[in-house]
Length: 202
Image 1 (cartoon, rainbow, N blue to C red):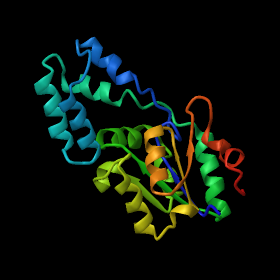
Image 2 (image 1 turned 90 degrees about the vertical axis):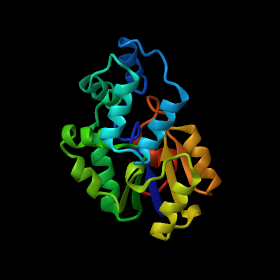
Image 3 (image 1 turned 180 degrees about the vertical axis):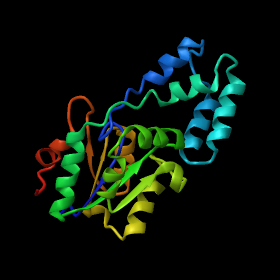
Image 4 (image 1 turned 135 degrees about the vertical axis):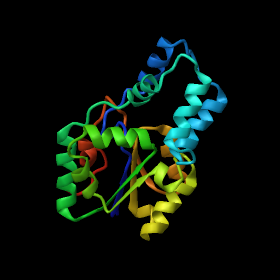
């Protein structure tokens, strides 16, 4: 029986345009990113670089970029957060039937944008029993140790825990850790359909 629900953030609660940063980079003649740069992006999500170091790396590598251009491009992935999803989360919280967790691959620049542009962010955060951002815990999906971290930190049983994410690779990793899963198809499904999709009590 499901007692705990772990939610992803991007394309589960906040809508994303995952192709937007690359469209911006192409405006400045950057057609693709090399392996080193992609690895640095992942390490930044783990909090292994400061934001200042992260920006300096890109300005040093891509001469046409300014700091303003880069931050605009980097944050362009973030779109709107429909209020009805917040209301849905609050309804789940109020039932007191489930422990709720957020587990997101994110970074300092993105979360600062969210804090400055989503006026109910603090209310959203307050509905969770624990709120895990990859850059704060130095772990990121799909590495399996991030799931073990959440389970161990909260004394959760994997078989009693549902993980919701829009990325297949993350779902497969969660399955290896014996979590129940819902691979949410962004644009075709919505998190508010959770209780129809998974036949849970509400």
